Image (cartoon, rainbow, N blue to C red; front, side):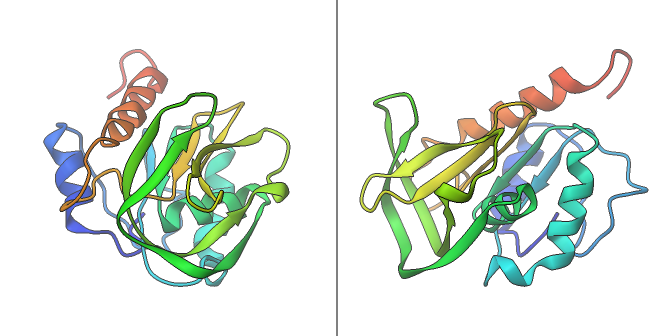
Amino acid sequence: MDCGAKANILRCLLARQVEVIRLPWNHDLQNIEYDGLFLSNGPGDPKACGRTIAALRRAFTAGRPIFGICLGNQIMALAAGADTYKLPYGHRGQNQPCVEEGTMRCYITSQNHGYAVRGETLPRGWEPWFTNNNDGTIEGIRSSRYPYSAVQFHPEGCPGPRDTEFLIDRFLDQVRDHVPAGGA
């Protein structure tokens, strides 16, 4: 779902030899055949994306892999039932340190956003995945039950660090693992 996607997202997906169906942010997914759903970045307040949030809630019922970046992370949180808030100072630049939960691994990430997920509102079955090492804000979430995950930063970010681009590969592996035998 294109919520304002950067061209490099499409380049990264197409370079991995996958078929991409690019849909606008307000498209109803009901009659669309897909193996995985990718929520792009985009501008603005995630709470203003009511139609996208509703479409994602319906997509949750299908159980197919879903991955979001930046605004996609906030939309996923809202669709799951969590809350978001405006940061006093947004995260801008190519040097935001994010620590993967349960590890001591810190990634230097590229970011450009002014909203964050309110961690204490994540419902049961959802958990923080990455945390900003500067201010402790949530930089990624994931479902503990389904193949749904999202990050606040840009794994496809260029110019800037590319050391989190593996997250796109991880999502595509989940899609391939989820496709029934004989499928795509």
